[in-house]
Image 1 (tube, rainbow, N blue to C red):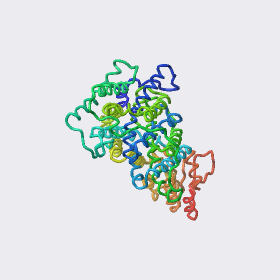
Image 2 (spheres, rainbow, N blue to C red):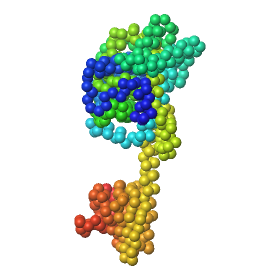
Image 3 (tube, helix red, strand yellow):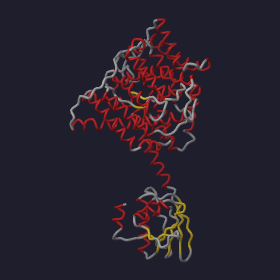
Image 4 (cartoon, rainbow, N blue to C red):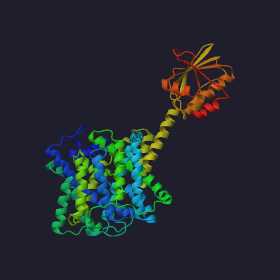
Length: 541
């Protein structure tokens, strides 16, 4: 997490710095923090789960059951204590086309297959590749997701029941006007003010929970006519029951659900693993990527068989939880069980909570999550990094997280390759009988052409040595470049030697049949140039 984001966290949620490395000691105070944080998260989960169910085109209980089951299982066995998972908008926007064309039963089957793919990814330990995501991409991810969370809350400022007024943000729906809009804005601001001021008065209860309770008491006590949770949809229901998706077990069904499953699995894992890294930065913990993949997969398999829409990590609710001081699995378990209790027993009470209170909490999450210092470092970092930060932010808002991260990684990788390709050069020492090229910079696909241009084959003496002490031979393009140079010298009747290859470079060239080693104690290697065999060697490498 960036220093800007950390400063926001410290201001609004002062318990966020508790318990860094190691196991958290479960004192009475920590139990209280975990339970109250879980209750706060459960309250924030309700409108989100309902809104995302509407986005996907399914019944609200499908979203609520997903929030309960995914949240519970990942809290129990996930890779990072303190993370919150549930139904998310990033997945819902992919599901809507499937539900509209094939129905909700196909969605349940897709979620099961999605979970199986995530379990496979965890078993193969693919989660470790999240470390390849550069820091500028992480900054763009944080900023983009903060903007997405903000835009999602704007749907609550629309007339209840109007088109798209259930969490779609800016698109569609009729905005509140006049007195109702001013009242909604005032209650939202009051909630934010309570969260801001409460830590200066007392830290016994998480500030977001105090904000929700106080604003809800004012609205209910004075009978204020403002949008409430119940205006979105009724959340009353029973316990989720086991249900095998009613789809034909045919190859055609598999062809329908597989593309959606792969996309959902990828989006879910990317969002979960990036959230895992952010929570790890805040709590001082590392690792757990493969375990998180397995947990997300298991939770989605179970959810698909119990009538849920699937899910992944939720950065907004995770931030609420961690910033409230929660550091163990207890808070996530409490949040899930409270959510189930809301559905089964307390729906009438929860439906009275004003949406303004929950919006205020999420707005404070936006302020604390956005990396504000990224706005100032844009002028100080390399132009490519600044471009990647902005690009990932924009693509996250306009498309989705998975696309944004992939685009950001590709652009960063291409920029890195280009910068390294320009670094290759050579210092030379020449005598009457020998010339030594001391290569500087890595030799790989991007620098292969520049490497070939370093040599003056026609005018060099009969013996030429290429010294790789300050270089590395990386890939097949590098092998091809070395052989191309060796072929040119061989055609001129000149001898080419390689010197100071690192052990891995030596193994790479030997395996491809490019080295003739006369003496293992001498760090000089001859290049084998056999026109009849060369193509086969390169092809098999």
